Structures are given as structure tokens and as C-alpha cells.
Image (tube, rainbow, N blue to C red):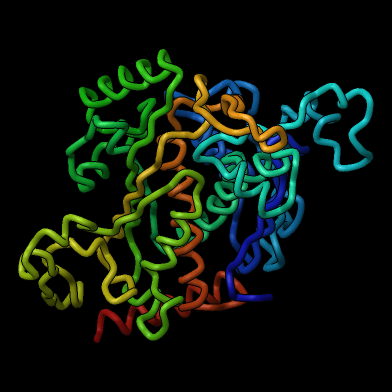
Length: 392
């Protein structure tokens, strides 16, 4: 088997379903379908979600890579059926042609500003832009959440846990520290917006209601925290091995994400160096550690062993109930952009997707660092390294 962790997703938003193939998980890892389903359900929640989430009830089918509840070391394939497929079988059929019973349905030719519609149609030479939107849709992230859940399960074996929260919707911001999240995480999991500050959350809900009444959408900022990382994941020796670069790549690949920061992020550019760097200390039990964590758990492209703190900005969703101006790609006349079912605000869902992406990238780095064909072998390598770190 390969110790290089990689994955591939496929499927369209209104096709038969979504498939993800995940390679590089060692043998012997206990994994249950309900564990994956839990994160799939978390992705579907959040105040401001649209009609589609009332239709879908995402549940995974494990196709391969497991036997009797344990991974085999071979590729894991996971399938998430689209319940809405029954209403789209003719329009999204992978076989045949545009038959008489679908010929009266207009082509999707009015691209939405801010979406992949127009550029994707130009790039792939499509006249029907549905060919673009079906794959560019954030529906694809359900497959990544499934893959991320498997990676999260692997990380649990090494004491690594991952959390997330929403810190801003529009102009309403929760100013509490990420450190407060750990003591109040049940509150976040039960919150309709995954927000810790109840007063701010009420203002966020009012803002979402206002946007919905206007036929508009809202974006925001979410934060992902990972605890228990060993020092030394990633590397400084080559640009594409840097852990922060890979995390930023993964987060930016989530639909509608337009910015990423780690630790102090952009605020760090406003201070003197003495106010930004994390001073180093040593304890016989802990080994080397930092007196603060402004770097967000990464120095020189490598994990420091301190908590990883990463934030992402999500732009407002581009599908509006009151569409903006566009141009029909066939007639070239100015029109209103097409309207699809969409969310008013999906930042809470994006935070769960962010957890999955972070889990995948950390698991990838762990597999590179500790290898092993089986979980037992990987654990031995990990324990040996951690003993070395403590005795350094």
C-alpha cells in the first residue's frame, strides 16, 4: 500500500451521488459508518441553509477498503447518494442525449456573477452552463467531509482533535478567544451558527433574516483549531512541503473561500517583531515549548506542537434570490443571472468542511512523517519519535 495519503472526489450536484476514493490510510483502523455520518449531518446544519438541505439526508455507503469494521490498507471508497437524483434523472442522465422530454427545458445560459459558470463554460467549450455548475457546486464538499471524517478517526489514535467555530457573519463578530472554545464546545455544537457568543449570535441571525428578505446572501469568517499535533509535521526544505502552505491550499480549495490566515495572521503585520514572535521555554517533562502561540502552531512551515489555529474568510454565496445583471452567452443580450436553489448563509457548514480539510492535511503530514503499513507500525514510529522529542 502507499503511505502517501491522497483522495479524489467525483460526482455532480444533481447526479446520482458523490464518490470519494481515499488512499493511504493504514490497515487496522477501527471505523464505523455512523462516525462518518455524524460529520455529514453536521455539514448540513446551520441557520441560513437553503431548501436543498431539507431534501438531502446525507448518509455514506462504504464500498471498499474495510472488512468487519477495520481498514484493510487498500483504497477506501465512500458513496453518498443524492436523494434529489430522482427529480433530475432525465436532465442529468449520463447516457443518451437531449431527448424530447427535456428539449423544452431551456439551457442554462445566464451565468451568475461570482460563480464558475462563465469562465468554466469558456474553458470547457460548453453552451449549457449546467455542465459547469453541477461540478463547481459546494455539494462536492460532502465527499470531502466524508474523507475528512476518516482522517479525523486516524488522528484520534494519536491524540489529535479538531474543532471549529464561526467568528463572524457579515459585520457581526464574536471577539472571544479561541482558547474559550475548548471549555464551551458543547455550546458551539448546539448553536445554529456554531458561534460561542449568544448575544452576537442573535445579531447574526437578525442579519441573515435581513439578507433573506432582501433576496441577498452573507459570508463570514470561521476558525479551525487542532490540538495534539507533534512538532515537526511538514518541512522547511521545499516549498510544497510546508504545512502552512498545504493547509492554506486545502482551505482555499473550499468553494467561496477567499482568504486564509494562521495565528495572528494579518494582524501580525501591524506589530513590532518583539510583539509577534513566540518566546521559547524548556521543561524537563514537556521539553521545548512556546510561552505564547501567536504563530498559530506553525513556524518555518512545520508544526511546533502548540495548537494549530487557522481562520478562513468566506464570500457571500453567488446565487441570489434577486439576481444581478449578466449576459446570455448565446444571445449576448443583457439579462438577469440565473437563479438556483441556494443558501442565504453557509458559513457554519463551511467551518465543518474546514475541519475536514484540516484533518486531511494533518493526516497526510502524519503519514509522511511516521509511515507504516499498519496502524500498529505507524504508532510505534510515532511513539519512538515522541520519546526522542521529550528527551531532546
